[in-house]
Amino acid sequence: MDIKIVRKIADIPAGDWNKVFPEAGENYYFLKTLDESNLSQFSFYYILVYDKDTPVGAASCFIMNFPLDITVTGRLKNVTSFFKKILPSILNPKILICGLPNGQGRIGIAADPAVVIRAIYDGMEEIARQEKAAVIVFKDFNLSYREALDKHLDAGFFRIASLPFTEMDISFASFDDYLETLSYISRSGLRRKFRKIGKEAKIGLEITGKLEETVLDEAYALYLQTYERKEVGLEKVPVDFFRNISKNMPDETKFFLWRIDDRLVAFSYCLASGGRFIDYYLGFDYSVAYQYHLYFVRFRDQLNWCIENKIGKYEFGPTGYESKRRLGFKVVPLFNYVKNRNKFLNPVFKAFSHRLVQQLYRFFSKREK
Image 1: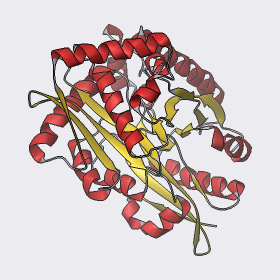
Image 2: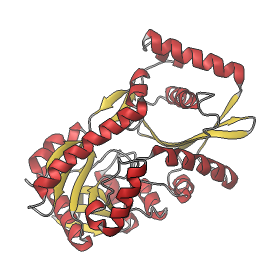
Image 3: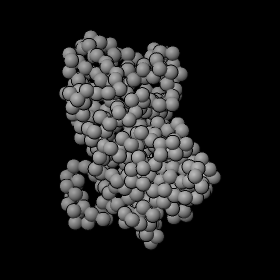
Image 4: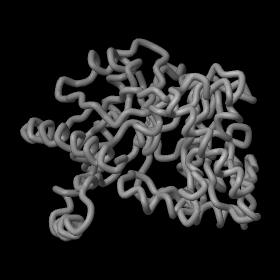
């Protein structure tokens, strides 16, 4: 097997990548958009595995300094920020991650999984040595990868649960048909919200594949409002991402824009590909978001679009589990495979990693109450 490692996916022929990833939503052109959009927190790498001249494996990776105080908030955050300046390598270690900053992990495998996974891991070790990364992670892989990763990764890796994603199978003829699948309490609660909204405001919806510059500025301001309220998140997407994704993926890109009296109050960027609808980034005007239940308006209108366009699966991402459960989404277990490259520190890092995941669960449970 030959392993090709590049910093820009444009250095790999699109046909080679797509042979290994024929149906991935986050395809070659999605990754090209990440490269072109200057996500300053990350350094991207791409690994392609060849059997002679035939591509048989592929993976996207990125380097980042991971904040171990990711769940710390309030005054304690000031304390940890101070120590990070003094001991950055301990509290903010450099990590090499196989996967994407936001989204499920995927590896293209078109040959013997044992050979492909080993080749990708060898490529990651080479990157980690060059970058002096302390930790290697296979991030957010679902159950379909579990057997292969359990069986074929180096014995130094340990598996830990990640924050699960949520998704919905769509088989409804209409939104009213969908409502009938919910519990009485959830169904009546949604109908009451929508009746209240209808009496108080007329919310207009526009769906487009490209944002004009003035609208892009408005939408990005809403995105920043939402990002700054999250408290926990790996990536802060620059405005260029939303500009470039329209050029690179015009057919798959969907921007939903909601206005009240010509004022933009909510927006979302979604990816529709291969019968799957992925709800990626959103923004709300929080001066009216709760008054007009914009979270539920967004969900209703996007589900309606999916039904009308014969989309079979709606992927809603992690967190907000109780609200999404009431809306009918199911939880998709995800797993991380983690290894500290220092074999003496790896047992300690394993114990810490399990503790960190527990803290994340508690953090998000607290935020939902």
